[in-house]
Image (cartoon, rainbow, N blue to C red; front, side, top):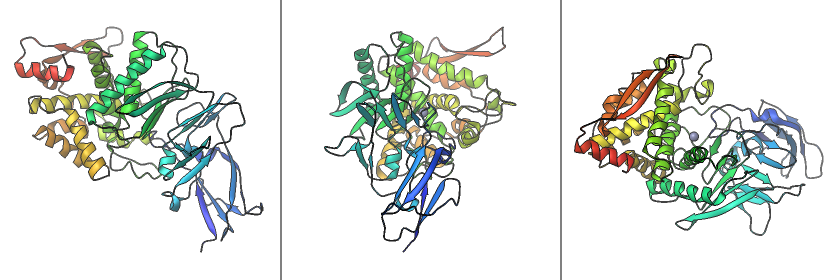
Length: 465
Ligand SMILES: [Zn+2]
């Protein structure tokens, strides 16, 4: 029988690959026995509170948490709303992490709504339950006077958009477009793996974090009446939505079950983030939101960012993924000698190269979609685990039916990318100019003349027209 229990605060939140040390925000910690008497509390390390004297007894702990930074990976509270990151809010006991949890939120303000991916208890306002702490940590909570946009259903599954301070824009048009985005995401896999999905707009700011049945996104609807802003908003939401498949379900081996107390390093964030970036373009293109020219210009953006980054001579995609805990999510550009790259940029470019290679090897019979489906079916549904670096390459090669060892050099090494070779598969090429003012390279994707029927077929496969 144990006399002590260790209560822990997570050090990071999955989806934001940086050590946040949430325990720093905890103050005024006390533990009380069932008669309201204080129990001894020790601090064996910076994120642990060790409570003693608890044999055969229920006990209570009280603590305050800091909630002063408006950011998707931090708690924030003011008089108008509250945003709680569960990892930064709820202490957990390591040995009990697989046990069900119930939470109750008491609101002292005249706030009317709570948005979260958690299941609510029947007949009880603001009381929620989850199967375990992993699910609790996967469901941030937003409370306040929130606005809910008219939901839509796909295959009988409800999709909601609810948020704080959404701004003024054409909400009917917005939801109609979002529905097309979700439809295109779902059609890649042919099924919907959740009971309901909620987009949670946490207010103006930057960044979003993906979860199994929800995504929390910084959101400001003012300005969405401009076509360009609407398009980039849809692209951003497509990215966050696609993550429910790619990273939450199709995932690197190391990203689950999580260890909340240390860095969970993986070589494969380029798959989780870079391919999600490639897919955000594909999805908005397939949804009819952007045209071919805009699709290509998104890819040119990634190509130019990479080709003007000297970090590409030093750091491979796998190194960039592995080192993100030190370098930050976008590498470390402009800071000292730039020896890091962004796995978003090179990952998206590599997504294009793999897609073109698979299409070329199979006469456009197969594509990157087949690879994503294979990973979803084999690793998420059948094996119920993540894939390793080698398994990802094997899966890609089995879809292509050929060795892709040359293409994977772009993943494992710093070899310069032969754009013309891969773009030519779709009857495209690359043209380069130099910006006279700052000497930056400017690469553009161009259409080749006199293309073959296979090139035309691959172009059509990729662009749909
Ligand atoms: Zn992402």
